Length: 208
Image 1 (cartoon, rainbow, N blue to C red):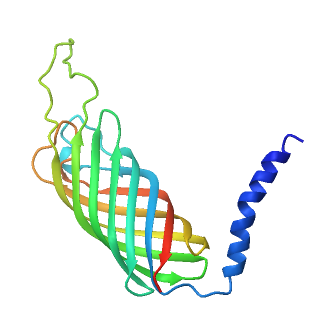
Image 2: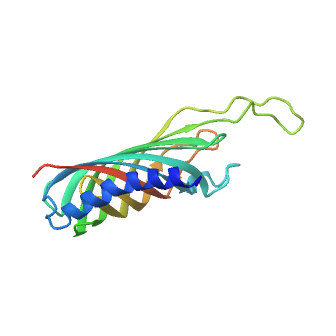
Image 3: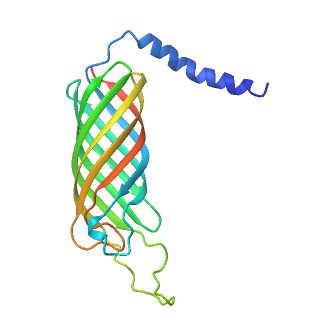
């Protein structure tokens, strides 16, 4: 009996979406739409220019990403993507890029897409506590100034659309920011290839 309220709540949540999806099943997808997506996942970066510092390569961060796009045609869209990645005692990585997406598959209930992006990345070093030497003597404060880098990348993803206005999906990306000059603290420097993966929730607003 204790499971009855949960079952009723689950049925009330799923039933409207299922009914709407069934009603829309026979209707064609709009040729164009405006979309916006939130992605939660992770990012791993290996900064080649920082190998001689105390920083360990293959450092990982939690990823929070926002993206938006407009379909110029059913198979091609343009837009932008921005993200934040960070970890305590490490670096923050901010990214802002223009993006082009190509949709080789646009079924009624699924989209498959690939993308290319170009933009900028910004790295901030976040020291975890005061730096100290071998015997506990204070060391000079590390340089925490921002480092800016041009960035290029590619991506791919699959989105499932239970209804035309909402999609759930997965995506992966590979990108290469190039940080010029010495690293800030244990932050990235030089060629810094990174990969990310995450789960995506998106809204779609048909325009035609």
